[in-house]
Image (cartoon, rainbow, N blue to C red):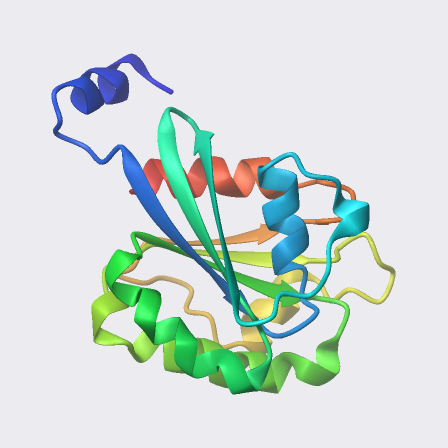
Length: 177
């Protein structure tokens, strides 16, 4: 973290707490990414039922992660966390191209939410370690991700199981809040 950001935090001019809404379809790797960020063993990760909340320190910030279930019956829960959201991580299983249209519909609905209009979005292209994973450019096209946007936006390749790409994505996201 840079000297200026540290100074601004001490003066109370920038946020010291971040509410990170972590969403995506079921089995995309959301909870595994949370385990990596909280330094928990990834071998013991089970699918989230409803939601889970974890808080950790990153880059001098207190980050509260709202790990939301990707099961469709829980999608209505997501909106209850919008008011506490200062950043969004949308996780996609890049190796499951059959679900890209479903992920696109969920993402577009999320982006229409008025409370989230100015919230930065980190789009995690997960499972890039698998040979069946689509390339990030193909994912961006399938999900109608804009080439440019008024919203701070980043597409990050990652592998939750291997831990690659997560740190880089989070560094970018935390610089945006």
